[in-house]
Image (tube, rainbow, N blue to C red; front, top):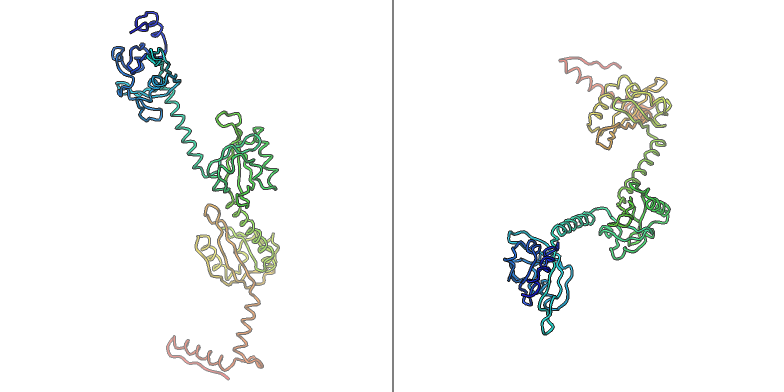
Length: 431
């Protein structure tokens, strides 16, 4: 079939090559192949002789796995056009079912009398390992991109000037900008003026390699013009060829800031009520020891706030009311709900009793464990004195202070009922 087959030198050169080489005629029939090529294709030289490159037993496919039509084969393209094909990727299936991936180059070797390709040479190498590595890398990239795109955080990449070169789609959820709108912008232009110094300092630390793991809170401008509180943390990967920028995680902390603001307001309000409120307040541990008392309670009991903070609620309670007081706080620290207020006597520093209305509530820590109780202690001495006076006036004559007729009849009726409980008895009325 010509000098390629018959020349011993040419055969020796072909067999010495590290890549496969095949020669096909204008119809695509393989008329010559070196040993490396036969080995790559999984066939013997005899099996290859006379087989057509378009033979569907080769199972030719594109890199994406689509079947490769006969006209799409590299040798077919060169036969049809006369133009060389360089580094074409394709897959073939060997007789044992193994998929191999090839990088193929084709050239016209000889023209016929009409100037059309008569012989085409194809050189090819087995790049299965490299192809598999590429697929694995693409898989890793796809998984990484999936993680980035499905992260709840906004992930952006900045160049050394602060210009956005990448942003995942969460940026639209957080700031209302599409990728097309935000890419190319300088991130510093989105920062609240009052937070710009902190942002510039953060970018400077990132460029100096000192920013990793350091969180900064600042406000960014939403597409609508409102400001969104976020926390940002960056990592300098400018020297990483795969990234080439500063990777910044941006997390929405609007809700957290709102909670913190509400908590600060509540703490301020509690402090205001505690310090300046008219009702006595005491913070009591499960051992019933007062660890903080407000000025109102100090005035009620005649102690200083510091003196009260060194005492138990029990020792400040009148001896006749201690049992009820102990039971009240025992229920509280057992975790029971104590809703109703009770009236009892406390003892002032001068040992005089004072009637108070006490209402207690429990306070729990972040883990849900009961931490302490709050006792509201209100001086009701004047209320009780007023009530007793009104009751006396309702039952006694205003001029003589003697019991009224209605009160006298009530006392007689009560005495008669009591006398009947023990059997027949007598009741006397002395005038």
